[in-house]
Image 1 (cartoon, one colour):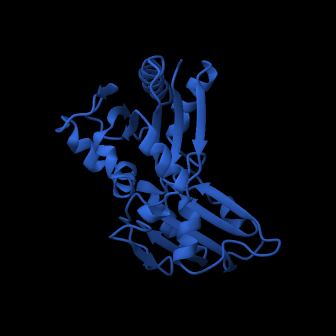
Image 2 (cartoon, helix red, strand yellow; image 1 turned 120 degrees about the horizontal axis):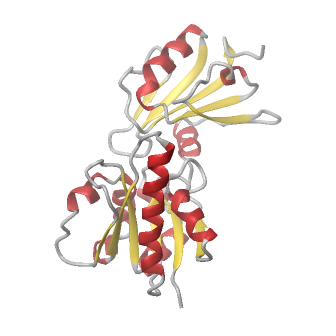
Length: 253
């Protein structure tokens, strides 16, 4: 009997936000799949549970793993599947990498071992997990997803504000791409994945006089809150999420 592949959302940063189901399935799994963005890892690596991991440095840098570890200390005793997930945009290269990742997971599933893939936030929202999940599902493997609290919901809660009320719309935008037109959509705009584009995004928000707030590293020890576009640093961290509300220059046009 083949194993099951489950993508598990660990939430945005606070380990207390993991669901009971996520905690249970992490405890029950045979193998924890860990996404690694470090370009130093070129191929998938499987490592049986042992006292000292030869890849401890990767575990320390994986935010999703560290969040889950706080809630499930037993993770240290699980076998690990380190999967390269570089932050690049070359579709051909990414396809080859994701194909290799899925093949490595498939080999483990064929041995009857259950895998959980630990991913930040929710696995259905801009998650690397889905690149492996959809390939395995297409090949007939048993797959499942466990929702996690999305970063934008956690950020709104941290700001003590609603994302939308009554008939307001919500738009989730990948800010690393052109957002000039989308910023003038009606309702609330959530800007994710700004990354290195933050200086351009910040400049645009200031020029358009948008009503914006940003939470960086929501739920983590080094969390920071910014209440206007002017306050946002150009070198904001990767885990930065902006909430743009209607008002000021962001009124409907």
